[in-house]
Length: 365
Ligand SMILES: O=C(O)C(=O)C[C@]1(C(=O)O)C=C[C@@H](O)C=C1
Image (cartoon, rainbow, N blue to C red; front, side, top):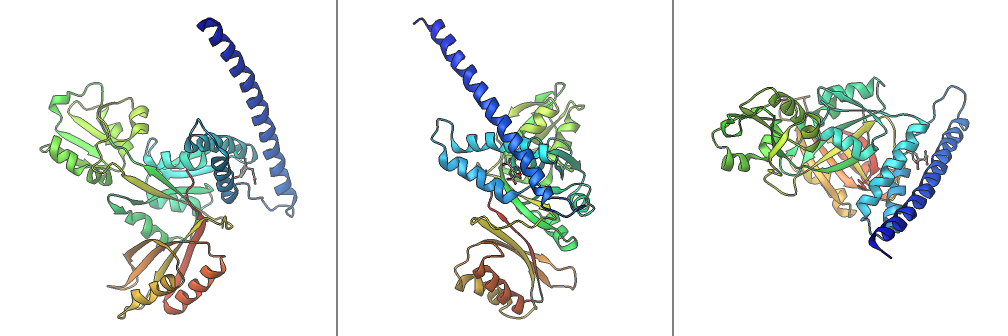
């Protein structure tokens, strides 16, 4: 067979596979629509069903990854199914998700990675506004950054948890790659100013010291905001990611300039919905302790004696008294697991206050 004939035969095969995929995706979407009807039917008149089910989504994605035999890798395959589920959920109920804007931020990328592209993503100007928007019911969920592997905790987010009653329903981790971006009119040999979010400037500190030691570093509200600013200026550059670069039509003069190649940010999904156990969960709590010797030791002891994995502990001023602190603790397990229930009871006895922020599936993607 000639190369041309072989190509034609292969394309015919791809066409018929696509037709089958189309049929199967449509069948799946119809199923999801029926699931929505069943969920609604089970409830009394006037009560609204919960369509988004993070525990089920985590299971579906993991199941696909277990079954996958290649040649596409697990992450790639799960991403495709992530989008199919996102579209199916949008048929049941279009979700509105608030994120730290403007468009093109890493938080938007995290929202789309977690929920897929069929959600309506709504940009907010500040972290606190995301909490307020969710609390007011204007959106069902919010996405907020909580920690970066290079720079540590995002204190605005932690402090917002002290002020709002919010449930954590999920987490998402994003590899953060920063680029040095310029606009069409930028004179690249005359750059005298670099805009970015303070966290991103910090994540690229060594690179900037080595390549642009005398350039002014200007912290702005977000990386996307930085990208927007350089468009109209001839002597400035921005540090931002791929989404902002594309959205604002900039070009990269240096790629992946973050000081640590494994630079990642963890984001939390906040809402009002408690998530049932999946068998592979995390729980986040806030604990405030009496200011006495050994307080932290007493707090951590039940985790140690029960062999529970702590994944993070962060301290913040409590805001209710000078030199008093609260601890943000993340650990493996679900608040409904009998062992975790026991531990939480012990901690409750030892502490001034214990607030469970939520149990949620560990990030799959
Ligand atoms: O299983 C459900 O409850 C569904 O609504 C179906 C489905 C899916 O497409 O697989 C869609 C949305 C939910 O968040 C979880 C799963």
